[in-house]
Image (cartoon, rainbow, N blue to C red):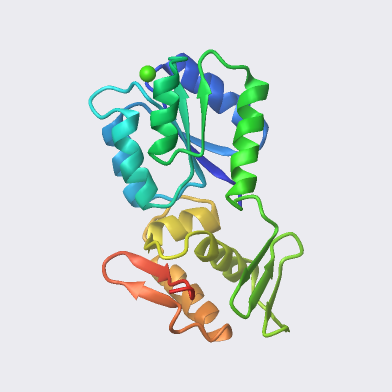
Length: 221
Ligand code: CA
């Protein structure tokens, strides 16, 4: 599964520049140009990182970060101001980093990678309770015992583990795992999730969310 980055920037030129640079690094990028659209898309889709411009029409970046944090997505602020007050405010509001315009593509890529690593979005191994998942090797162990999963079941599990305690729409699950637009394949998603839940005995962790889809409930609670 590719890393998905949401770019919230109202200047088309800058937005395109960022998108092109990050796509070269094999990140999947989605661009939105105002705060309202950003809030809407967050409700429906999952992202691993948000690049957030501070000065946006209507809802600005400082206001938007509140919404984004609810989905536990790391944020890097993009600011035109080199004003120290703005950077401090951004970090206090919970941003992982900030980048000041104009910036070089190299700096942008480096900062994106550092944040993704720190936030474990690029991790190749995930341990969750008695579950060990090796993303590169495509293997899963439960209580040390290997569990056979299909490629799709495996991808769904990784998506759940990277979005713990967040309700995922069936549409989101389908689009991220099958990598094609959702045309109402509700039963496909349901049957794969059921099998995954059954194989891992995770009836209590993977729960259905009414009218939405599914949620993985973390064990730390
Ligand atoms: Ca702007």
